[in-house]
Image 1: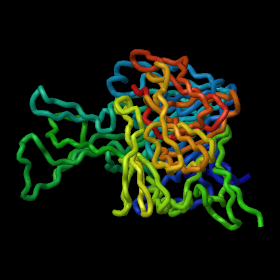
Image 2: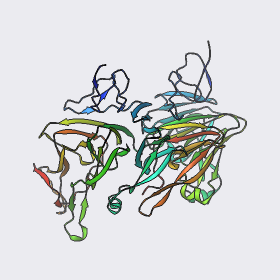
Image 3: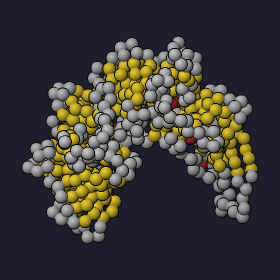
Image 4: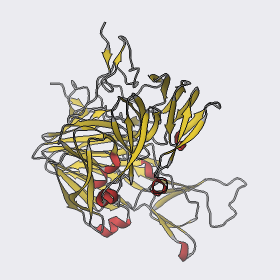
Length: 294
Length: 265
């Protein structure tokens, strides 16, 4: 039998299938690569099935795709209750509590996950036009995901969350000090344990992936980062364009761009829809950052 | 040569047709049905045209589709005024009182719908990525539609609304205070909805149940019973309960994949 490695999920796959049975990426298409090396993640084809354990998930739709699970009795998944679109009455749903409820509440993260156990069907969807991204994970593999992008994971994938350590503070007086987390206060970490698992994300817009070489760096819009290998490091980066006969009438304003710098080695993925940092207040304090004044 | 039956609206079409003349559904594509029986509403091809009464409707665009109607002199349509995208100058507009004035206003629903009569062209769209759902209504049909999902209906379709009953349904049902109800008496009619994201439909057998996120509910046959039920789950810091809409057949249920969760933390 031919050995075929899916170019998107990097797992041994079936070359005779129209789509990769592990991640749903079409097998029979050419890779779409930009001149700078970004590989476009092809959308999962409508009605494609992805296998995990004795169960499978079918992706339906193309604008806001839904993930419809057919769960075998021994399999289970977990997800945020916000994403549950429908369920059959016989599918068992139970709470999965998470540590750090107060911090999660303050950061705007869901406090409770829901476990869905087979046998039965249920479906999940997010509320943005975009793509479902499937990441099959081998035992001991770990991946970092930006907050609110998680759709669901199989039961053997462990979930943890940590501060992003990417922040800055504005406001010159103590009364109007404000903390900003341009890529969220916390990031999610997922790791497969004991057996392969499947992680599903939802990305607004289109998704592009790239492999960074050891020591290679790049700058990206903070909220566009979808996921990265845990070997990729990141930190705040501030750039101040050169002023040419232009200044703000308020001294507390500044003209700057806020990025995240990524260091390889490893895989990174970005989404084309993001929320740019908006304010122009002078930054008075920040996490570790590289800076450039033009 | 055999006529081609549309799998979405069941209308008969001339041999060689590539889209249904009654609802615009592609006739040369297979139905997309998931393993559990949800069927995707047909994605209308850009510039697809179909007929209702003596008028035509052309659907333009794919991300936020526009319905462009060419009204016959004897035809009219009605709609909520904020979905009107453009119209020919000569197309007359009038208003139709739906009844329930103050109560409907409190519920965030219009108590007046706007009527446009032919001849002339007029176009409609809503403001979210999604798809146009064309529902030709045969005589004697009753369809309940989520509030603000209705785009436009032909004048032969009677418009009314039903108040959602029961405090639990009202507080936790996530479908607002009212549902629009569309009824055809002696004549067929045409109803256009806008679903956010993708639209899926499932036909429930008598007594069959499905639990749906209330924000995802789009439409149902009036025979389908809808009831808010509490799940054995607690959410949020205050551990409040989670409710889903229990749909009980017989009849069709339509859902949309993009919605604002009705009890987001």
